[in-house]
Image (cartoon, rainbow, N blue to C red; front, side):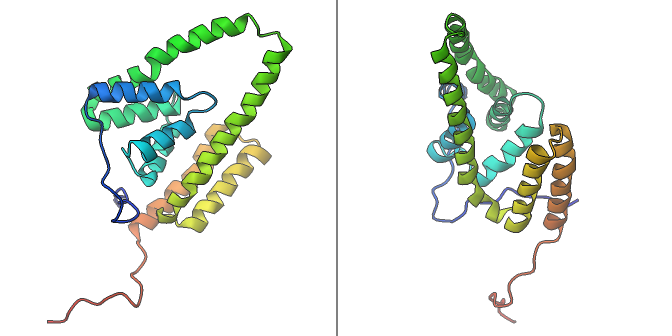
Length: 213
């Protein structure tokens, strides 16, 4: 069975990755991350975990996000448990989950109670419409920032672009249910990557030859 090792950082000049120092570090890191997630947490997750804390590379983030995306439940919660479990086992997964839910739950309940008092006001409705556009912009901007990581994907950039276009058409034009998009387009992508990982491309012709005895 072919295996797919995590790709190394893009260049050897990049500093080594960091890791959460303790369960408390995991809890408060994901608490702070969740409290920033107004309007769409994807952009915040990518910036905090990849760019600021450097707990993973962009390639690793895309791989883990893809797994979290197809699992039941909120994808960012799934991702937090995967990261926590990777570093501290079950205790880490629970610490990350607690960070994602504890304080943000209190904030959401308070805001929901306050919003219920003004939900019929025209100004509140206009504000919600405006925030919806900002949330969409955050997701698009994060997607654009992650495109560069696909250059080192086992599929290759053209195949990744073709699958992205096929996914867009399936959702926006054909209006397929999400489960059929995952099984159909996602299944094709998995099979394609499986074949690519098992049959790596030959080295370039001008590659340095080992010395002959």
